[in-house]
Image 1: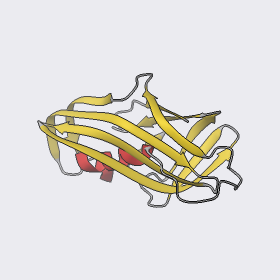
Image 2 (image 1 turned 135 degrees about the vertical axis):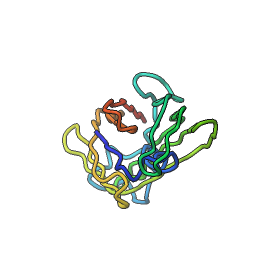
Image 3 (image 1 turned 180 degrees about the vertical axis):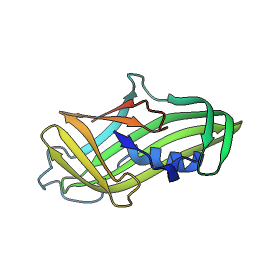
Length: 161
């Protein structure tokens, strides 16, 4: 499970954190120890639904900016994980937020190192936004259980290449 730190709970900062899902390649020749896992993994579904997917629709208290929204809508529109063969990843989520009628598109990208251990794939971001997170790697599929809104409810994100 990925937990988003409280400093990222504002509307814009949240979507910076959401962008963690799109990973872009950071060089490499594809010959390292994880060359078999290397490639692009596109977001296929969230909770068995293809994007765009609403992960929150209702009231929301932004604890960072101490602001209450009567209607706060968060939608994930796309995501990509790109792994290179030299244990590097770049991750990005794209989405849309409507906060009491104010709409904006957002995207977040982070990069770092990944390690595969059996069917587990561990990501450690360079910028500490993600910290260290674990997903399941089965063949051409990466699955994460994520509570992006910190409501105590995980959403299952599935990426495939």
